[in-house]
Length: 96
Image 1 (cartoon, rainbow, N blue to C red):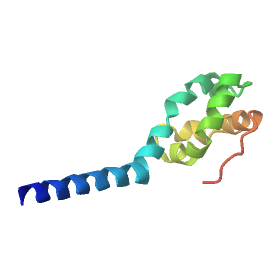
Image 2 (cartoon, rainbow, N blue to C red; image 1 turned 60 degrees about the vertical axis):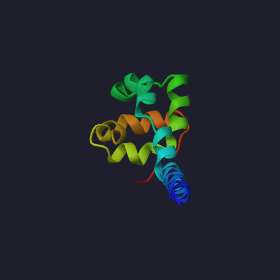
Image 3 (cartoon, one colour; image 1 turned 45 degrees about the vertical axis):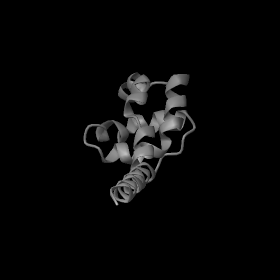
Image 4 (tube, helix red, strand yellow; image 1 turned 135 degrees about the horizontal axis):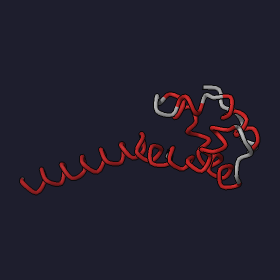
């Protein structure tokens, strides 16, 4: 009887963990605003972005709307310079 209860708890725990990973854990792990630090100079000055900046922008492209909704990043993501940098890198400007 005790073994059956423990097996059920283990199955439930695994199912919950799987749901967390599928529902948001995996996508949250891939969105990392820190990877855009190489774009700081271009974002603040409106200058030409580096190759590393463009590479990281392309990798984080699916996260732009999430970043734009975060008060810590919104002013950078929504700035006119950000649009210049994104366009210079050949990345589509998202509509959030």
